[in-house]
Length: 228
Image 1: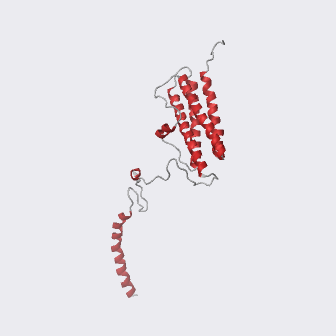
Image 2 (image 1 turned 135 degrees about the horizontal axis):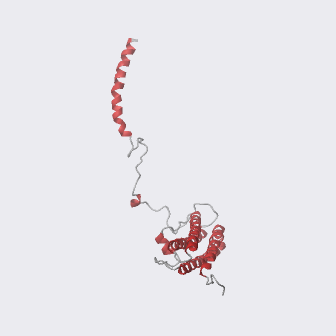
């Protein structure tokens, strides 16, 4: 019994000496920043774009990531056409927002609201087109400078213009977009890409035709007060 007590005493003393050492070693387990977990570093890893590796996929290519029953040639043709429609739709969408901000005159209230409504509808189309491109294994055009380079709609001046001129520019943009829609819908149909054909016909063409109707009526030269 006495022997056991003598053995335990040195062990207890050794444990007391080790305790301060453990306390001093604790800071080594603290992560960077304000954290206390060595496994978690709350400091963001910044400026990775300066030494970026190769892109995960280059623009203009298609991959067979998703098994949707379409060959590479069909996907490529559809992605090329859809990126053209995407660039045109983004341009038309932004033109609506520009005119929404800048419109003046006696029809301000009506056009201000109509332009914004059409802007929201075009934004929905932008997302639908881009998502279809991703499903097909392509890369959607996205940035303003790339869109401006690709779009078939002429660049709009920065200046504020009269409402009839705004409407005329919008109608020209719609017509160019719809012409491309008919061409690419026909191509998709011939290639057997029913999903792309359906998107163009049921969403893009129908939405843009409806918008053409609503906008066109604002430039009809009709008497307001007395019939002639």
